Amino acid sequence: MNWTAVGVDIAKNVFQVHYVDQVTGEIVNKPIKRAQFLEHFANRAPCLIGMEACSGAHHWARQLVKMGHEVRLIPAEFAKAFNIRNKNDAADARAIWLAVQQPGKPVAVKTETQQAMLALHRMRQQLIKFRTMQINNLRGLLTEYGEVMGKTRAALDKAIPEVLGRVAERLPAVVIDTLREQWNGLAKLDEQVAQIERRMREWKKEDEAVKAISKIPGVGLLTATAAVAMMGDARAFKSGREFATWAGLVPKQTGSGGKVTLHGISKRGDTYLRTLLIHGARAVLRHAKEPGPWVEQMIKRRPMNVVIVALANKMARTILAVLAHDRPYQKNFVSVKPA
Image (cartoon, rainbow, N blue to C red; front, side, top):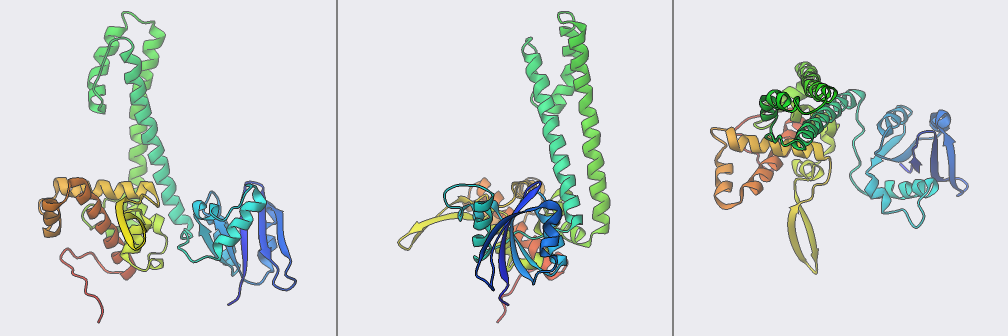
């Protein structure tokens, strides 16, 4: 079907739309206010609409799909390659219009439930980041008065009561009270993180996909919920290798004249999901009683970090296979290529 390609640069209040009218051949590049955006596409024939995968893009994509349009969310770095010279809303819309007509893997349009789970992950991640900053801040401030503590949270909790008692003899009471309040605030952050994880566990009980991939060694609560929420529809990926490539767990390639050189992993895709997969693979190597013959053979001939990334790659492929083919995880399953 010869659908009209439309490039949309979304923003907070004014959206920029770029397309070529198929009847008149006129190049249209005009701003549209936020309140009138859906109305602009309500009575139009089905279009191929491209947008950058940024804040609010999934919401607008869901609304446009309900109207019968096809929406492709494009990574910002791909659209940037088509932006020539000056950068402004009109140029960005034109770049997106060019990018949406190129072959490539768009970002999956997520459901509201998937976005809700990702919101829990982002909030938990922010709380942990703030907790780490708080711990480092306390350690740094007390180091100014000659009190050095260990880097771990356990070392801080063990030493800080005695440390505050010693520095209380030299510092004003208002400073000691503030430091103690900051230390007590860490327990509140712990409770907030634990509460979010409890809600994730409740969601896991109701989601069959999350329960299915949680049986894979190295895939825990965080990895399972994040993977299901981020990938969208698992059947959109052609193979497990494509999903591992999407997660940035395959070697980066450079080459010329027929000679191809493999480097470290590409680190493309979502950093958070890739980090969870690698941490899960590291946990398997450290704690699994029987990691399996494949892992044992890898350990004999490759460095440990290479083995960890290879196992994370395999975990990603297994996750895709379980979800795309709707089958339970089998430890000794051997895939066979079709004849």
